[in-house]
Amino acid sequence: MPIDQLHEIEEQRKEKGEMSFFEHIAELRKHILRSALAIAVLGTVCFINKEFIFNTLMFGPRNPDFLTYRALCSISHSVGLGDNLCFKPVEFTIITRQLGEVLMQHLYISFWLGFIGAFPFILWEFWKFIQPGLLENEKKTIRGVVGICSFLFLLGVAFGYFVIAAFSINFLAGYTIEGAQVSPTLDSYVTYMTMFTIPTGLIFEMPVVAYFLTKIGIVGYKSLRMYRRHAVVAILIMAAIITPPDVVSQTIVGIPLYILYEISIMVSRRVQLKQERALARM
Image (cartoon, rainbow, N blue to C red; front, side, top):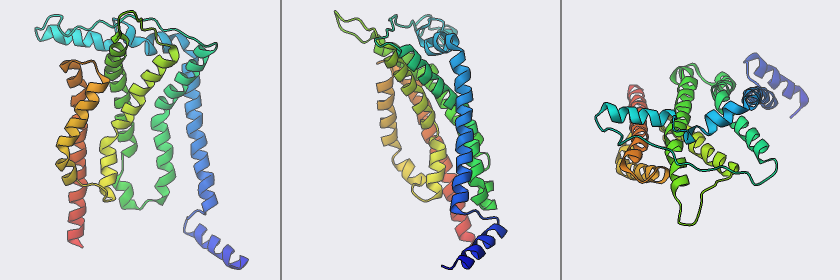
């Protein structure tokens, strides 16, 4: 294609407010850099507060005064069950086997805490990147998606930390055999704490995922309802894996996950019915 025609196409694109491929790349780079800077700043703040990060936050589930244990005990007394639901954490020692392990785990924890804290800002930067390419009706349709996704993610992380991690860490530490003493490394402990929290935050995005999958026609509310029983079984299996082998713990974990699935069905139904009404008017 002649150079004059290329310049003409570029001028037409600029008049329409459109961006070239390389301009899109440059704009995406700005949003990624700002997101990375936000993670770095918050991660640095976490790194500076070493005592709080380790003693209060990471080692919180080992403390008998942990919020989850106090809440369960309070509920137990308020419903007349005495100390039946009172929970005492398992005592175990965390060791380090490698020189520099504490420093590396400190950096690792600071990064993920920075990511969690910056997650709403990262979503906002992503939204600002894709927003210019959306039509007005599309912008109205997904208005508030940043706030909803941020809320669900942080709610999932909190649920993973206060519920799943609290029960699972104690179950794994108390699961032993005669002659063996559980003394996990700091690396192992931090890895499990991360595994129980951040993926849970992503799981809590289930209604948002259902919304977009229904929007593009991959799933529908009828198929989600048809596989409800399968979902219940999967949720129960998941709850049984990540919690101690007792009904109370499994119920505490399983109920929110099932509620999320039902919310996903309602969201999918609303989107699909709206699409069907729009087609009927055409």
